Image (cartoon, rainbow, N blue to C red; front, side, top):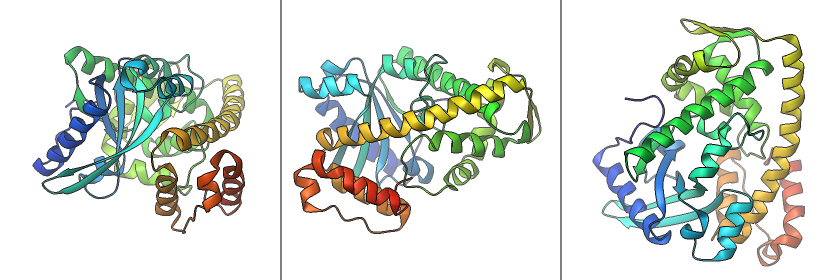
Length: 308
């Protein structure tokens, strides 16, 4: 089985749930779907009826994938657009949160030329291919996932310890990426994810080691990297810029989601409560006038430690 982008092989119940979601996605996006990538907690657990299924829908172009010009323009201006979808199956309701991204933006966002970590920081993690239009599309997706891992490690290695375990490499590197976003998860989240995906992270590191910009030696479960001191200083500065840039873009994406994501406030409250363990109430005035009053709500959640 390939390290990057294996075709999803769940049990019969999971495959039926995915098939129902895929049919609904194709209908909603006018057959413009090239590939669907499956990631997150439901991929790890194998139970697609518990929680929200996390998907990335890769499309040929935004105009063909959206019913309105406004949605297509929003997707092009600040990808991705995020949506909610639910559909019934013989085993009950299955729900997903999915992001729409063009193949061109996927390949651009994982490249070494892309500064922001939003895309390459996501696609360096375990991803299964739930649908692909054809074999050529599958190979493009797999190549993009491999490139994301190379870009991620190239950017992270100069900013973390020169040696340690492969698990600590990924724990520290993912923590850098997570710190560039407003997130509800605790600071220990990266370590938990690495522990759950240890086989993948070990295999992915070995798979791309020879292609990295910096010499990376792997001996059993340990690594050592040779990074010039000047590059470490540059990397520390770059990640500082990414933290500022990423949080500003997180706010922009959140505001865009309020306009494009049906049931967006309820989803955001559910996600924050799930990860923080604390109740989140959306005031009526925020629902009615989001662009005016959401700022105060976000500031309060940030001060209370629910948004980080």
